Length: 111
Image 1 (cartoon, rainbow, N blue to C red):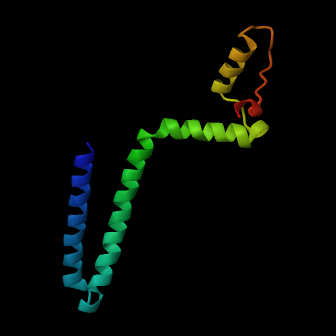
Image 2 (image 1 turned 135 degrees about the horizontal axis):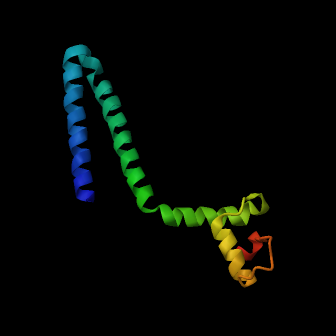
Image 3 (image 1 turned 30 degrees about the vertical axis):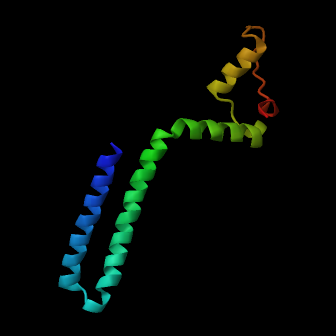
């Protein structure tokens, strides 16, 4: 799949190159063609980079989510609203009994 993405990105940049050649030949003075080509290719490159970044983030979302949750637990502490994972963790710590109606989550225990 990454090979197909790279070929698609290369094809997109070649299409942008052809469009810029058409625009440069029709509407832009010869002395500004390089500048216009640079701007269009830079914008297309940023677009392709954003697509690849989105695919990378989608594939690595769970490790990133875990890291952010640990950081938020450690730094933000009591400002966080407990999530279902925190409640399950607290149930495991308390033995899973029904005697406690409140959930106490201590962020300092994660260190």
